[in-house]
Length: 287
Image 1 (tube, rainbow, N blue to C red):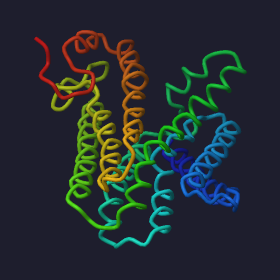
Image 2 (image 1 turned 135 degrees about the horizontal axis):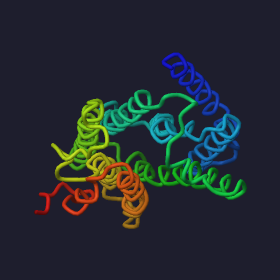
Image 3 (image 1 turned 180 degrees about the vertical axis):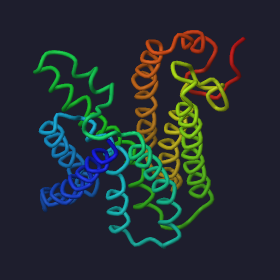
């Protein structure tokens, strides 16, 4: 099984390298707007990944796209503007930390092409035509557009400010600490699940005592951190708050309910845990 996992991940890496290169070449040269170019690049890469996932009959090929795609985007942005090394480092450090954390999770948890995320299986559990519509839009394009929107505030910090200021530093620290929160939460859950005596039980300790989804709270904090970095120049539009709020809505109304519903099926004590424990915020459990 380990051999299959490694070979699957090597294939996945090669597909991604080819995808990002080809998708960049496919972006028309006459696109002058920087974010329009990035968005086209992002969407074309998604469509190529979708084609490969269709051929391989496994939508989990898309899983690392959430964390991997922002890396070439951020380096592309850096290459388009003449900012100082320290300025770029303050912005990119929490983003690289976030990307490495999520990609590491994928490396650890994905068992190879024999495994497909249960959420994708549920979305495709319908007639063939509707399943493929859900696959293309629900599993691939929709998350890409959400991530693209979440990254959009970065454009303003790169284009409107090339000086390090206190607000940028504080926003970067907030973003970094949000990733620390989700990393710690993931590690606590991983240790809990690795104990065979905890099979079928609910994690109710440490951060998970105060939130049913502390890892998602950290993820949401990360995207608000991106927004805070974007507005640190003081010149970004007010409507930019839509970017992190869209991500917040995704987790509150989609990701958290899906995970809760799955846990209700698999864990007999989860219903009581839901009644006592906050969905996202770290709050004292109800008595």
